[in-house]
Image (cartoon, rainbow, N blue to C red; front, side):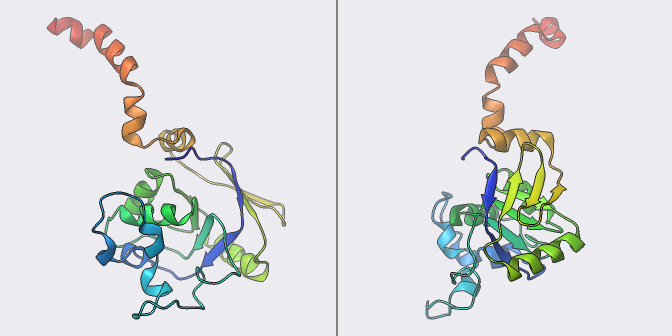
Length: 201
């Protein structure tokens, strides 16, 4: 997993609400056990016709919008708990998803896979949709260190929340397990000096 750097990017708007994980990555594509390759099937039922041809007016298939930031409608990532949804978004190239609400399990999976879910108010989300749709080349800056989201052309900046532990993991390019493994020596040293270990020894 790459370290999360400050991102300045165009935005891909997807205003649909209640986008569930089966729409993000349909169940028929869940056979693989590695994270690579899921990006090509991201939103597959919306991107492709049944014969495999491209749906030309779907936002990911045109050249009007591109970037590392997905702007999504309310209640993004609901439905089943499949981690593959975060894998598919990351593999496609997204590093940030902005919405007014995320399903809890999706949010956890995203944070554990290098994908930053940024929650904003519904009013601000609507403002962003209007702005991005009017100015497709507009750029957004996401600064994880400062926990800010900035609409650069407008000079509008908003703060967002993230658990400190997850913030540290993203900045260091680590999931929960790698973070703990990197503390192995400290854990061993602590165990040597803890009162509990002294009692049983």
